[in-house]
Image (cartoon, rainbow, N blue to C red):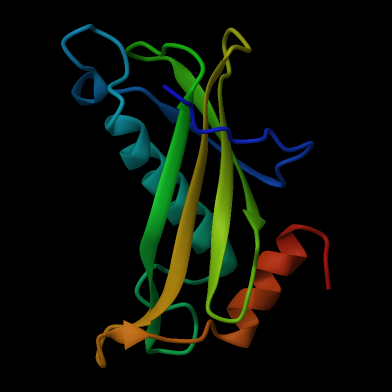
Length: 148
């Protein structure tokens, strides 16, 4: 079986620490494969808050986001109360969409837990269709990377 190959990036300009909770565990008593996406979602909310936006309003009062795709490469286990550092870098920032590349590291041990990529599309929830990303939001993502 071939494996999805996510390249680890040299740097990730944004990071937030999140703790593995009891509800994040599977029957193997480690972080469930599906629960890591919920934690990535929480990290994204913190990043968006730092930009002064949220997932339903990217700054223009009408454009939010929807996920278009996701890929996860699991590299190690995480257990209850482990402090995970979610590092994020915006990549492929375009007119209508962007991707977030994540590296997840156990802050206590330094072991890598996962690499994640999630693609997003700007979305007008009133019209129920894709929409261009507000320029101020795009600029915020590019500035996070030191671009512009």
